[in-house]
Image (cartoon, rainbow, N blue to C red; front, side, top):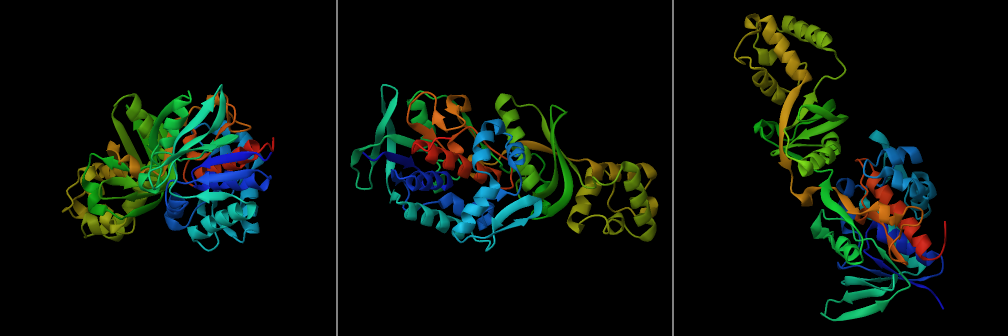
Length: 420
């Protein structure tokens, strides 16, 4: 008798799991509560879909600060090179951009989703939309199937030899990531590490960022201080917004911010080094040269070669120097204060943006209760997990989607009896 696998959630992890299981000769039903699949996938990478990072297994693990070691086996079996080849065979060529980020060559996320749907269809997956799974049914420590509500309001039991929960996390709830998978897993006895948004913009106590909203800074270093102790530091690109700060390095630091806010509410600050390539002395020499070049002018005009115009007033004000002064009136101490501010522009964290604005979810099903080589529950036989529902999360740069595809691949293969 043919084995029947039920996959819950038609996102990247669910589509990969379904296609892989069906390709091994099992009957697969993929249940999606929305009226179309992959809604969150379509908006990733600003609609361009940064689906992996061009690095090896160790690099992928290093890119997952949230339980990266748990991912070692899954990444080994389905790494970034295999993923790129997988999409190439489905007609989606890829390209590598800054930070080793990998995108479809077209720069269109729909191409990635279209390829996944093609893979599922060719493999024989039965995809059902508007099908909301209410619960996973288990008896005597083994999965029996799921209870499903249809759009007409009826509920039915669907028998299954194995169930893969790939429902996503809690961010971007409009796409269907409503945390249902956490509830289902909890009802079956699994421990849930408190879900929280990760890779999320930060609101600041200071209001001046709105005056320079839209300004992007590149090649800067942001250091997170928790109770005045350095917690983490990132180099790269950031963005000022109407509420505070965002951009790749800020999103990466937000994970530590979230952790600090959960454990307590200590003073949390961001210190921005606008000129990390220069020492204090080198920077002062540069400022002095610019002052000589623009002698007789105001401080504002003297700094145009060093800073974006919109940021000059902020730096001078934060340094406590009268912006109306001419260069000839600026003392050495004031000049040094300007340099110190350039190397340590300080912002204080008020809060993270609303959960729905987070790119991924940190927290989820405790990895200690999941076999990392199979993605199968250690508590319930025949129950598997894939993607964001697991307590794993990575940095920006394609690591999170790679984790979704890798766990989906392993869960699909092992649920179908494909083994290691």
